[in-house]
Length: 475
Image (tube, rainbow, N blue to C red; front, side, top):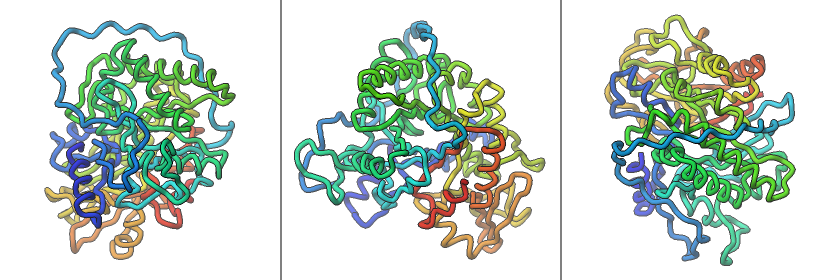
């Protein structure tokens, strides 16, 4: 994925008219994909595919503020070496207070840094009156194990109307988020760290007391320094299951809890130093695949967290041998791979001790497609061709606004009552697309409400249409 974003950035600079391929697609359990298909395959999905930051475009010669910028990830570290030190037990956690008024369901939405390029989606377009929280994706982890900007141009330097070129003036999406919060005082923002491509160094930063403290202090300094209300950790994934190039260790499971405890300490210390009455927020994005969930020590981590954003999408994709649903709400008796659905993931976390009010269910504003699919079963649970169809920005992934405008009008919509999601199929072309629409999202919202869960998380805002059809279904 890192190579993809560098290539994209070079194209953008050389050919300004080019659109950006997805720099960070939806998150996926790579290990689950391998288990289902025997291998990740050439169409392994990109994450929530953040990858290496794109070079800064030209901008009238004004230099950004002196914030450290990340470098491309080094070659994979040798996994051999001396055994890691035994982790120091964390102090007893102080349960954070609820960041949302009792009885209020959270609506958390990711805004992607790269959306300001080809997608031409900017902070000013965020429907903040319909949201409670915005997560900015992503900050990176430096070679020295510190939080750093992911794309300094998009984050703090891009010029918008009303910005200043004076030395030290803040611009970019970070400044736009500050202005957005001034217009919508209820809104809270979090800086998300990591993502699919930038998770390669988490195992190292979680390893020792010193590395955890360095990382936590740097994340708090970066996020609070730019006016964010919290930090969201998107480690994909502890122990196993992420990008094959990631450094992982068996002790990641225990170390993750220690890392989150250190982040909570740093946030509480910063709150006290700032004289802030409202606690700073700490959340994570968590896996939903059945083989990855056991690598999360739910009982140990949740006391440090305000809530958990469950990535309940990318259950099936081009890495599978057959077609399936991207984000089915409920298990289906005819599904050849049971356990890959929202309800199963939610029940797994609840059984592991996560309080229902801290569980936020992820919903996708995109679909996944397959080509050369036979007409049997209207394309559902069928073999597909070797190449994924070209989507909105990359192969195999279709934003909702694109589906609504260009695919739903000409393809046949089907509904799976057991899984409570739709799909599209065109027998003439063999194209099959699994996606969510207002009907399926309304049912997911009802599921969250009726189960007493903490709300919904959206990946990601630019996928909706101009009328906010999907967002408005979540109510």
